[in-house]
Image (cartoon, rainbow, N blue to C red; front, side, top):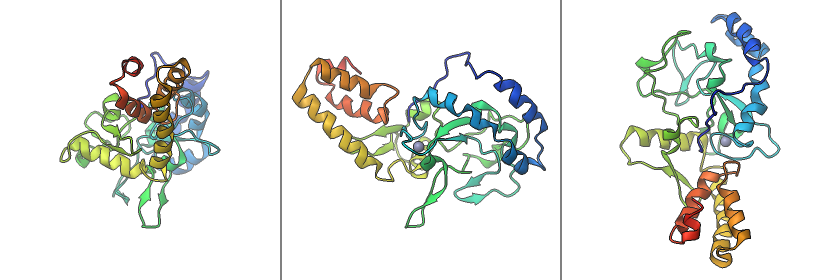
Length: 258
Ligand SMILES: [Zn+2]
């Protein structure tokens, strides 16, 4: 997970604010489900959100390949589940359905619910647990300040720092077990399947080639170019490559790239 930062002020596509202001004003608690199905205007921001991450999923840093990316609502728009259970009396954050600050570009693996053969269901879907349920905001315009989400947020740098990357290709919590921060990292890794779907093997294989190149190629311009490419924000799994390339910090020419 690599932090997504919009340089301020963000330049939203022409007409976006005007377009959604009308929609946001019309949405009601009673009619929210039908209304949101009919007016899924957040999709119009997909290209703009995609530009911010060079077409990578904001959660797992995978490029989409042939599958289209989704616009995930970080705070679910139509009801919340916690560990797979729907919260009683929950409304979802329907009033934030058109708030671009609530949008996260997501691959379908990270966003959509999918069960494996062992019965584990992964994907963010409607999951949105908080450290303390009593702080959950249930009213339009209410305060979100007291909410402490269990999911790590790719738009918060300190959240991204809670994930570490091993050269075995696995994503791990970067903090001690027994802390709330560990719980958040561990939960995010499991729920989004950051180590599922053969992803560690894909990362490990790519790293082996790069590792060989550093050993055999040394400080040559084409090797440096290749490493710089893997460190750039637009590279798939660039957080992993930054960490893996960092294992060669003892070489001053590598250290200078980090
Ligand atoms: Zn993803």
